Length: 255
Image (cartoon, rainbow, N blue to C red; front, side, top):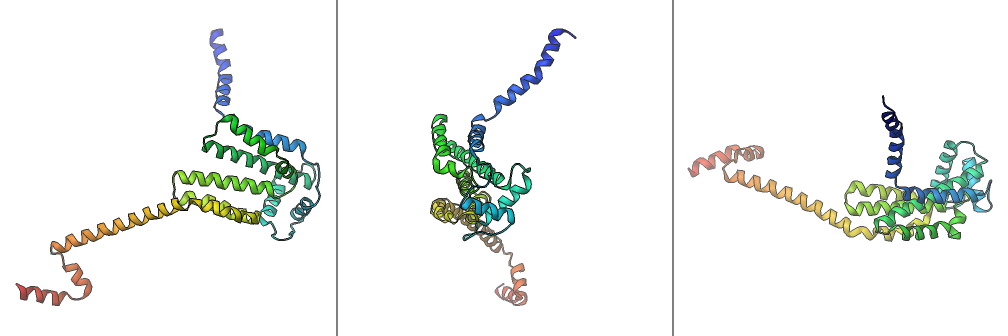
């Protein structure tokens, strides 16, 4: 085997790795990874105060909190603690949950902006502003319900946009499910329902198309039945109604 051939063989894995890296959507990975790195670097190492401490205590003890109870957050938090390795204390691990939820919210927002036709640098500016806004940043590093709420909201909007491109009942199920889950996380989701219902004309259009197809099928059945009757195929109908004898007598008298 020649040295040139050996060199090509040795370079093949490297070339395949380069091609794999070039095919990745690094902008999408950055939309998730960069905010996550920021939040992980600034997250408190233990429990935070006020509502964060109450929520973390309820998750750790499988208890409840004041109304509205935030049942989805408590369930997600318990599942998170069960799956995550014991890194730090419970408070720190729930702070990490908020950081991951915030990064997911930025990622879904990036997908929404792409569907709206935004180019790279406007997306970078908008997402960077959202990620570093003090109100959002402060909730992304402590155990709170708000970043999960924003992630669910962004995912619901993204799925609604996907459904609007090709309205089907199956595609509508996913955003409807997420909207219902969001109500279990924070009651302010109800304020988003008017925006979600903005898609009603498309729903009505899909319903009209379904009714039109059903009516067309029934019309075709009626036309086929009428053609059979015109050909003189009365026997099955007369037999089903129990008037076969009277029908035959009337036919003989006419003849």
